[in-house]
Length: 285
Image (cartoon, rainbow, N blue to C red; front, top):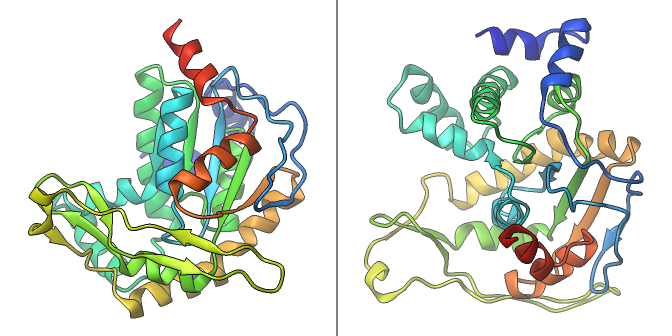
């Protein structure tokens, strides 16, 4: 509870001291200028070689924040903290808070700042206690108020904003499946969007399950068309101002996904000035 109070408290000497105790980080060597990358992304001034990065991933529900944040966390040896996972853990806990969250999530509404901050605060403190250094946040902040609170307690180096057309996002969300036994995530949607008005096409092959999982696939309760559209509406209304917040700080990097993982991953690494092989060799050494 004390951590939540600190997070909600206006900027003060105590909040500054908490920021000082937060994760040390390899900072961006120069403020990243907001721009959009499509087929031919250019390298940025990011210098993540120390790997103690403190990054945020933004983007509409279903865009793939978790997929790319998780891959980067493995590559850079920093924890991937997804507020969606924190919420789902609480949902599965059987607590009173979990029951409240179930109603909110199933209606496609945003979870309140107080709840998200409480869950995130506990996770950050637990990580700090284990000696974690750096992080990649996924799904937070979702409002300007959350971004302001985050600024009070820690430093964010870079904010990566992943982008896809709404029609593609809806199709992706409706195609999501989970194996009820192994809990792996799959997607049965096959997406092919022709390029138009100077924008490149988008092609995403389905991520199909192995034979042993086919009969065990389930759909998330909140992955219905009405709920997905409501989530996107709420995001556009409440969360897009967060992009302006970080754009004003010179930290926003906008990235249009060109396709699935095979097409997007190498382009994203190029934009972030990362070399996968070099990073793996560095970790191995």
